[in-house]
Length: 311
Image (cartoon, rainbow, N blue to C red; front, top):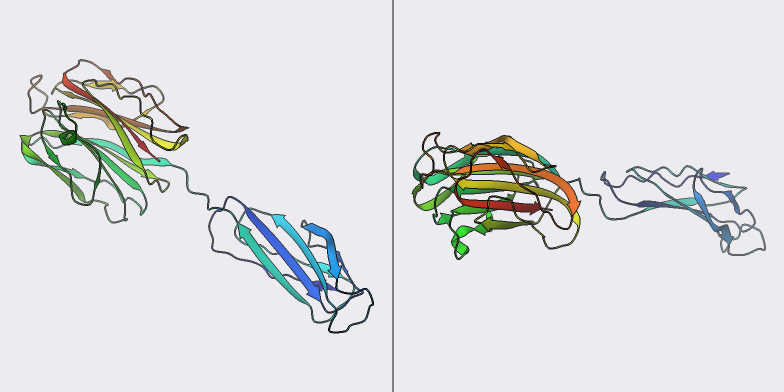
């Protein structure tokens, strides 16, 4: 005779480990199970009985057990084999480890500017971010202005809080609820100025954003986020107070945002209301990152470099 533990269909989700435990039993003492389901590992021993006296008394029971480690979401252990038995029954149990999260990935990376001398600085979020994605933005003014971040966004860096900061810089982030597509981020400054923006959308259900800013140097600084080594989206920006500088290359191993850089106006040089910003990203598992330099045709005043970790 055979006994079939039922198929198990847990919630469809990727898991790091899945063990399937299959059990079968019958009311009989002298017909032990002789083989586990195909490909399953038998318990040691495969079968145990409550008595060796034989017969089919209701006080006798034989049980068989086996297990297997499998990927996937649906399991059918097939059959145990036994000689004979009464009142058969079978159970399938799945034991699963922690869910496997999706890998960290940068879904969108862009730069933008709205060449308006204003206190209200807007950025239109492109595409349709998915719920759980991390949205990150860097706003840079040409001169030192006090920033007010948009409602609903958290702050990783605000030059308002950096004693001695020379340039207006704001790094903000939020976990998407799936409704931000084609909506606008609005940050404000205490006086009119022009601003440039870098934006990234990071998938993989990241939860932590940290930033290191070097006020006075356009090279993105070394950044060591809390938590040790982990898969991380490293987001970097290089900025100047200048209107006519152009970036032509990103740090080695990085991918440029699209477009690589943005700026206010194309005339003049170091007007206090003008800024230039270049941005890039990469994904790598590391505990720390030293990005290296962007390549600019000319420099500018009030440089700042930004390195952000998303993990």
